[in-house]
Structure formats: C-alpha cells, structure tokens
Image (cartoon, rainbow, N blue to C red; front, side, top):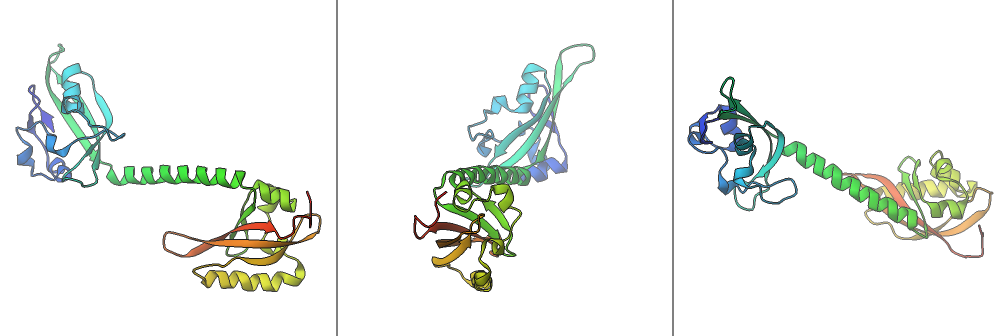
Length: 243
C-alpha cells in the first residue's frame, strides 16, 4: 500500500485487499488498518493505531521492518498475524516525507506453528523436571522395545546409567524365563485403551532379579496411534535389593 503525507492510502494492490479481506478500492482513502480490527502486539497487548509501522515511518522518517501485528477480522475470532514493513518516501535531497510504502505478509500459520512448538518445548521441560525429580523409576519404551527415556531413579534402582539404558531394549531388562511373557504383555498393551497396573520381574545391572509393580501409560501420537509406553516401576519389597 502507498500512503500519502496524510497517512491515507492512495494506491494498493489486489494482494493487500485479499489478505485484509477487503476489495482494494475499499482501502483507498483509509489509513490502511481499521481500528475495528483491534490490532495487538505479540504479547497480546493493544497496538495503538498511531504506533503502527506506517504511522511510525511517517512520524520518524525511519524504516520499519518485520513488525508483527495481530488483527481480528471479526469479534472473538483468533487473530490473523501479519509481518509488516514500512518505508518512508522522501523528496530528493530533503528529509521531507511525501508518503510511505507499506508491505505485509500473512504469517498466521507460521506463528501458530512457532507458538505450538514453544508450548511443546515448555511442556517437555516440565516433563523433564518431573522425570528427574521423581522418586520412582520411570522409563519410556517404544513399541519395538527400544528404551527412549530413563530417569535418575531408574539408575538408582537398576544400576544402568541413562547412556547405557538408551542403548538397550526392554528384553535386556527382563529375566530370560519371563521374556516371552513380556512380549505378550507388550502386544496386549498395543491393543489396550487402558493399561491396568501389574507385577513383573526386572533385571538389575549386577544380575539381581527384582520383583516390581508396574504402572504403565500408553502414549499416543496426534493421529491417536500408540507409539510408546511410559512405565513407573517400584520395588515390591524394599529390602530386595539395596543400592
């Protein structure tokens, strides 16, 4: 959009109208951004109309780049997010501003993805703290038996470090006589919507066989498919095996 000295749009293209949900001719004579859109900053606070990139470039004579603005095209709707640039046009050889060229891109999908990744990262950090500080042994096992996670309590109980455990499979932790039963349990878990707590035996690094109670939780991906089992394990008898 090209804005004149008074800040009103004198020229625009079809892409601008398409992004803003207006016919290009509807934007002519306006300031480009309708106050009814309730522009907001990335932190959710209001973005004053007179502080928008076009107005800021007009006032200061400085270029504005990649300013993120959220606008609402209807009440209570999720905002559309724009990345906006504004470049002042000065009369040759002077600092007199004759207008401003404002360009913008719809980055809604990109921002939503970035926000989702940020939230997931935050959840992953909280989960990591829970695993680290838990007093019970907690492990994560893929459906092919590979160990995906191993918390400090698991190391204290069984003796294997996290680095060692992540190179092992579930069957490496099971006494030979119980391996077929464990495979059957894993297969049953893949079909179950709910996994009831059960008792079993697990090997420790020094060869000791420990009787443990196991509370398992099925982990599903976005498609609803089971991809791993989170298991919380606890000794049935505290005096079985001291570390």
